[in-house]
Amino acid sequence: LAKTTQPISMDSYEGQEVNITCSHNNIATNDYITWYQQFPSQGPRFIIQGYKTKVTNEVASLFIPADRKSSTLSLPRVSLSDTAVYYCLVSNDYKLSFGAGTTVTVRA
Amino acid sequence: EPEVTQTPSHQVTQMGQEVILRCVPISNHLYFYWYRQILGQKVEFLVSFYNNEISEKSEIFDDQFSVERPDGSNFTLKIRSTKLEDSAMYFCASSGDLSSYYGYTFGSGTRLTVV
Image 1 (cartoon, each protein chain N blue to C red):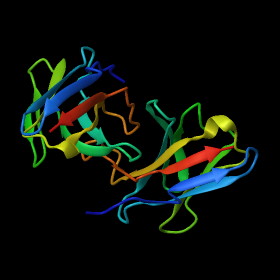
Image 2 (image 1 turned 180 degrees about the vertical axis):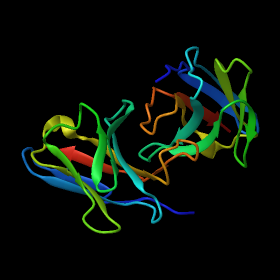
Image 3 (image 1 turned 30 degrees about the horizontal axis):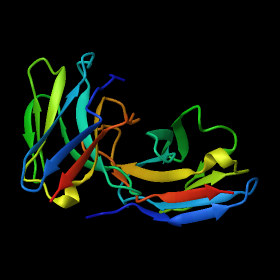
Image 4 (image 1 turned 45 degrees about the vertical axis):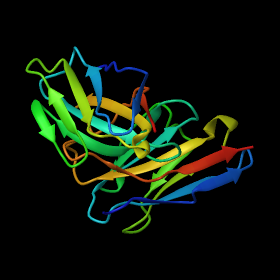
């Protein structure tokens, strides 16, 4: 499993865009990049997944450069309810390996 | 939106007792998992289950742990003789196939407290 590095924490304000960058220098050719969100005392929730270029869904966008050695999760116009831990996972395996994640705190 | 349901939400048990944590995966999913998260630590893989048998387990999943799909809807995790260090949130998850493409659906977890 490719090792990932992401910031420990980020602060933001309501209405701002939050961008979390994850480094995964040893990503394998058949690895996908997946982001999960976790609120306190809840299970992780799938946000978005991509392989290359850009992926967008109703809650986030995922930007992946051509070399795939990093990826950026973009959360548009965050609200207080987006305060959570965000995990970047890189794998082609059904067995998920979670790191420490990035704690995003959104303030009013 | 389909959900993975876990019961109970909180379980307190005495050291040495057996506990069974229950999960109802999404109905058309074929692959089932248990993960755990000790307070303040990472989410850790315990076991995966497919076609009525364990497909992979971690080193955490020792002889004290077992899983079962007793009927068409439930998926259980049993801890035979609980230890203090088994205190954690236990998450059940399910997926439709082995590809990670669609992500997995996790339940809200069971908080197990061993005293």
